[in-house]
Image 1 (cartoon, rainbow, N blue to C red):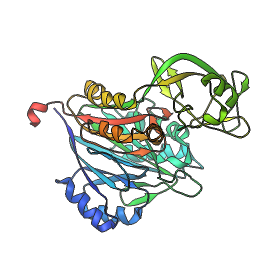
Image 2: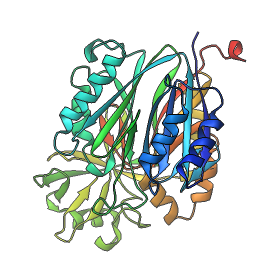
Image 3: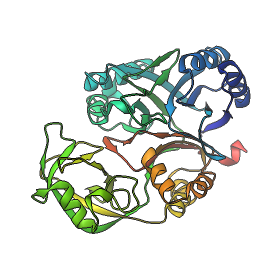
Image 4: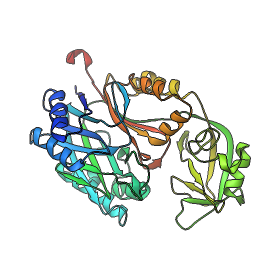
Length: 391
C-alpha cells in the first residue's frame, strides 16, 4: 500500500525572505520534494535561495516562473505557490542546459542525470512505477526536440508538464526561469523523475470537441512552424474561409478565431491539440508546434469552458487515480486568453477549487508523453492505494 500527499502554501509578499518564511512554514512537516511556482516579476535567485535555506537538506526543490499561479483557492497572479510532497516515493532531478542550441542533448542530459540519482539508466526505468514531471524554458519553443532527447533511450516513459512562462508574453523583452535545487536557469529544462508504487496518472483536459471537418497542411516553411499553404491555398485565407471569418479575426484569443476553432491531430482514438497561433502579414500562419507537410488536422469546436474543467476535476481525474491526493497542474496561458475574452476568468478560477489538493501555474505551452501540445491543461496526479489505512 502506498500514497503520495501534498500540502500547499501561498504568499503575495514581495520580499523574498518574508515570502520564504510564509511558504516553508505553511507546508507543515518537511516534504521530500518541494515544487515552487513563482510570479515572474520577482527576484528568482533571491527567492530560491531563501526557500532553499529554510528547507531541510533532505528536501529537493524544483520550480519555475509563471504567467499565473494555481492552488486550492483557484487562479492567482503576483504570488508564489509552494507545494510539498511527502509519502512513498523516490525522486531524481535533472537539469538540461543550452536548450535553444542543443535541445535534444539537453533533454538526454536531464533524463540521464535524474535516472542516475535513482541509481538506474534510462533504458532500465520501470515505466509502470516511474513518471517524469518536465518544465522547460517555454520561450525557447523547443519542446519537440527536448522530448526526443528525454525519450531517446526509453520511449515508454510517461512525461507531463509545461513551459516556464512570464506575464509579459514576449521573449524579446522577458525571460522565463526554471529552479533546480540551488540553481536558477534560463535556456534550460528540468525533470523531476518519480519512482513510486502509489497510484498516479498523467492526464490532460481541453474544452473542445471534434467536428469531423479536416484540413491538410500542404506547404510549410523551413522552420516547420509556419503553414504557408492549407489545402493547396494560402494558409490564412483558407483557414478564414473554413471558419467563415476575415483573416483579421483569426489570431488566437480573438472571439471568432483560432481559440474558438483550433486544430487537433488524431493519434488512435485520442486528439491532441496543436492550434494555430497567429496569421502573419505574408499570408502564412504561425503554429505553436512543428508541422509536417501532408499532415491532416481536424478542426475542433469550443464547448463550455467552465463546466468541462469542473467535470475533469470531479469526474475524469477520480476515475483515473484511486483516492486522488495531489494534482500538479500546467494550465495553458492560451486558455487564460480565451477565458478573458469571454469574461469567465472568475468562474474558471472557481472550477479549479474542485481539484484534489492542486498546485500549479499558467504555462507557455504544454507537453504530454511524447507530444508538444497547446490550449490544454496537463496534470500529474497522485493518490492513495489504501485510503482507509491513511485515514
